[in-house]
Length: 85
Ligand SMILES: [Zn+2]
Image 1 (cartoon, rainbow, N blue to C red):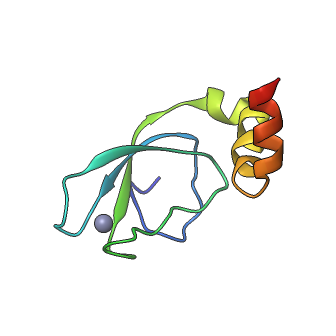
Image 2 (image 1 turned 180 degrees about the vertical axis):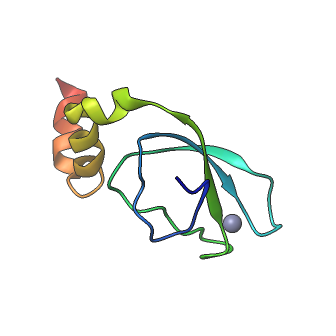
Image 3 (image 1 turned 90 degrees about the vertical axis):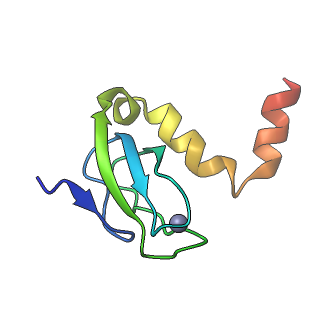
């Protein structure tokens, strides 16, 4: 398995990744889910790369978690309902 990934590539395994930027900031950790794409950086675009730090299979087994993450952004009404419940 390659150890370094670029924006637009499919995330091979859910887990914690190090985001390595093109000089404008130090590396930091991000949680990414399998089958999503590695994101671009708003600052250095595609000149960011990712390295797997720790695979966390529980992220992908928890389908509630993944679907919630997807729906939270495009459906703010659903989120508001959840918070008031
Ligand atoms: Zn960056």
